[in-house]
Amino acid sequence: MALSTTTLKTEIADDLKEYQDFETAAASYLERQLFSAAVWLYNAYPWDFSLAQGNIVTVRGTLGPYSLAALTNFDILAPERRISKYYAYDQGDISAPIQDGDYGRRYEVTLKRSSGVVTLSFLSDPGDGTRVFTYRKKLVFADIATSWPDDEEIKELLRTRTAYRALRNTPDWAQDAANYKKQSEDALKELKLKKRAGMVRQDTREPRDVWGQALYQGYAGDVDC
Image (cartoon, rainbow, N blue to C red; front, side):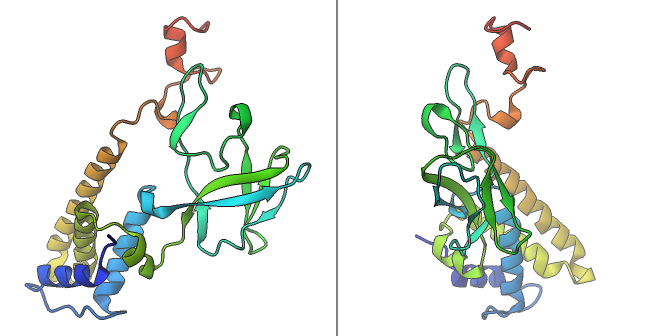
């Protein structure tokens, strides 16, 4: 079930009625602050609902550029989150920008935007085939009511962050606005910790030696240090 922005705006207006009556119509002040809060939350973490996958048909000997113009909702390549394990191919809950090929082959890619059309190029021959890549979608307000989950933790984050943004421009409410801001930031930290539960040896958090090997290998006697 998707999140209802209509209901959410009504709830936020009800929470803030001790300050003033807020209009909940489309394009109203409250809706604009809700969207700003959604942008803040959207960019804070690679949420499941922000991700999508696309395909590139590659040609042997052609590094690129391969146009992504057909993906009208493309924003950026999703940030990879790997779990590396000695004697095994890397795994992760968010795949590499281009999914690994046979025998764990990694495809290194670059994005180019200078032409005004986003293109993708490979740093080595991608061969013939269809390559799957993971990306983050552009955020538009209508997507909140169609793809965001009806999740109480997400809604609470949106309520408190919207309240902060709605009150912050009035000096008499500055302290209350600051309290709402802190509530939203604390709730975000808690939700991030929950999302990380069960994640082991993420590449960006794993200590490595000067040769780039996982440090625990040396302590286990698997490599010379």
